[in-house]
Image (cartoon, rainbow, N blue to C red; front, side, top):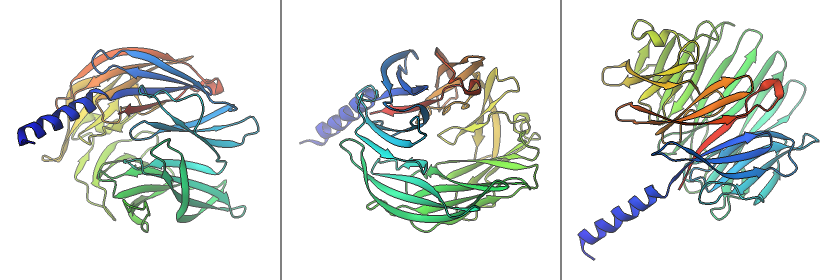
Length: 386
């Protein structure tokens, strides 16, 4: 076979794979999951599936696999027994009516799938005594055929405070850009204020085994201040709240052990928006941060200039606020979702985002209702099926 023919085949296969990907939004309406496709060209929604979770009375959360061939749903029944449901999806990302697996999950607190969908990591918590709990990270093997999980192995254990005045929680927060590191966070609430520690663990790509925890960052509190951390690829975005809940600066660090020197620091003296953060979230590319304005009518797009070590305003906006009921972006960041809230839920608007130019194209909206509990809006979840 000639090199030219081989190259043509590779390009054709790559183009076909890109063309066959589908942008998916899942909306949890009570214990019913509504599946929508978003056309990346017209930015219109099409409902492609409706799934009622059999036996469930309270929805917990939904985690799509990286290729969206499966979704993992946590929900509780009328006796408050929690289960983990595994559903295969069709070509549109709509889950099938019957789960491929249903597992008891009363002690399950956090889920994370590796980017290749070979392994699932889960945090389980059980009481030790009136003041402490044991939090365990377990690794499961994921079946490529139906998403079912098996072969659990304990990878790490934490002993955490759980009394009312001093409560700590272990959360899995994601992977680095090469999936060679898994990040987790221990967040604690105390009478003196919150504090948090962030760790990384090496990942064995063959077995899924995790290495020992290595601290990458920590912050403490005097009862008034706090920090919100978002790890994107190999960087850590630190939104600082000296007077909670009003953040007033952004620090961007390399996500490495004992990180302390930021690559970029931004306060109001550099950019006014950095001194008045509202609903701030980092873009999946790590090249932008999105900062909501004070009345949630729009979200400003700010570019991170790593060479100049500063954050600058692009002059572009996304309508409404981001990320309050679900992820602000599609997995690759080419779609941005803004939510216009009202007393009975919200309108979810799809917008196209050009990562190279920061230009935004506004798209269609769908109406999302309220679960009824304190008028809490129903959550949504994004995925790309390929």
